Image 1 (cartoon, one colour):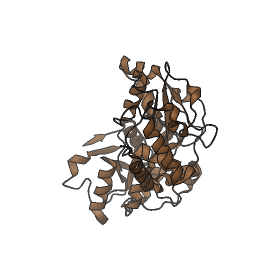
Image 2 (cartoon, one colour):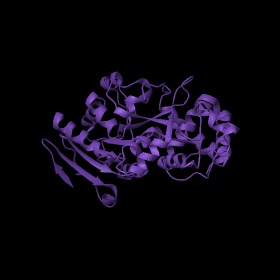
Image 3 (tube, rainbow, N blue to C red):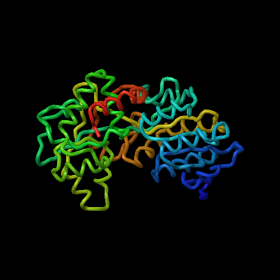
Image 4 (cartoon, rainbow, N blue to C red):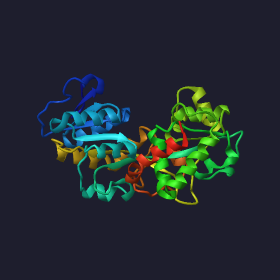
Length: 346
């Protein structure tokens, strides 16, 4: 389906609709870039339209899950029309890298605009929005002064009080990957076992379900990405807004390394038929305008310092962020999965 804009035509192709055939024309055009995207936010469409208006380059989108897109690019091989793969979490980007999906990019614009921690050391992929994995607490039942770090979640005093997602969740895998980097495998193993002992229930649901568990009193503490809270706060449903009002947020490890950060990010696909256009799109995503829109659509934090944030995020003020290079989260992913298995974290 193509939708006309002022100076742009954008093709949006659902993944399921193209399983049996090509998504785009096989011959590259000088004025197009083909994006395989696992981000599904309406605000991204406006970004692509703005890019086309600025550059004259049409953006064609194929949407799907990260694993689906990786497998499709692999199956297409050298005939793949994909120029850019866009997804969330460094763990997913690392998995794509391991499958040979990306090529290195050395861009003065990206090197200047993006912090070192948001750039793969070899330019395989880049982070364009930031996601803080925070601790939620029940405002009525829990004194937030009792906890200040992820490590505290494993303290026996919180037995039966913690809600958290399953071990197959990439967000939790990346959090544990960061703990491996900071504490070693043995320390990360002890943490995982401690959290399992402190769970109020078996892991279930998504991040929003963990927040709801805290609000209802099923648990006093939960772990989740920050933007799920802001979504509830901005919901059209009063019940959702009430959930948000009943929980508080802690940005962990402010006295030490800082809060764990993950990303929405992208890289240029190996063999991209429109490589120059692909690089231009990534550079555009680092602009102030794109950063504001890219992050605002899902209440994420911009990567570029000084860019305007959502008012709720602005109200939280500045906080210390873990400065680990995001590539480490992927490199430690296999060991994180093994630790979860040994800890019997479901």
